[in-house]
Length: 340
View 1: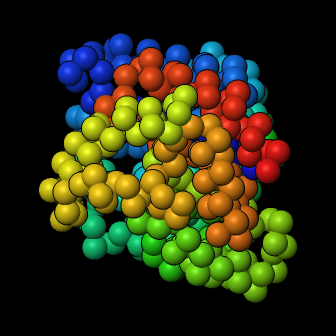
View 2 (view 1 turned 30 degrees about the vertical axis):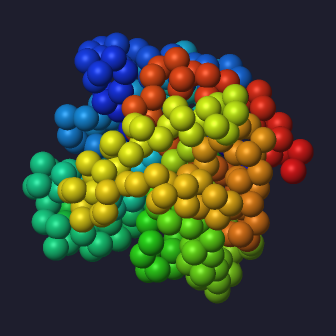
């Protein structure tokens, strides 16, 4: 199993939220460097267009990281494809692939944060139709140097070449999904690897949806080993489970209560938090041993996963705490997970 981290380039943590954007970006790049040095497999950067995050130009951040790393794979997490031009998305990540010498990946999705739609002039009523059409075009560009294509939301392309081409023969494109069954079926029908964002509740509840993905892939003629499943969830590792909870809970409760006001969720309570850190709960928070045990348990409950990515920089944690957690993941968690 591959283990990595997804970041939204949060500028909301550290020193009472007074960290400058310049310093926040530098610290993010330092964390990616450390992740590479201690053996993490992948680092993903999300896409948002709001004050709290610095990740609106995902490929730019990843290219800066590529110049400072050697082995770690560099991915979007996710690229909001519905509000983007597939030609430019491919070009940006093909360029990243060249800069990184073949370490780029794209995780595409419709986006749970919807600020990109009005910003780039798209109608939310076309939420799914936009994504379906643009994914079709992106895959065609990925697989063909010369492209002929027509659709509803973008001008047609008539036998035009798209450059540069990625170094990897088939640039990896994952489909990032939440809880919509149609999205799981779509990924399976296309034979695309699946990245499932589970950020609340109990992880095992997603097993029927992942079964749908595998059934759709099998029906479309893909082998089971081709249908990779990744899991993205909030998590944090410290020297002991008690210390991890002590460090993680205050910022997590503050942020997710704030998000709840925006999205209609109830406030975070300690009882609710305790339910989320139990064996079946979504939060992968604890000592290296506890975290490894929980990742393996989630994998078993979902029928086997190929990748797990932590979302860590959204809980008011300091740069030092995040760096320590990354070191624990690389030196302790990964060996334990692979030992099984």
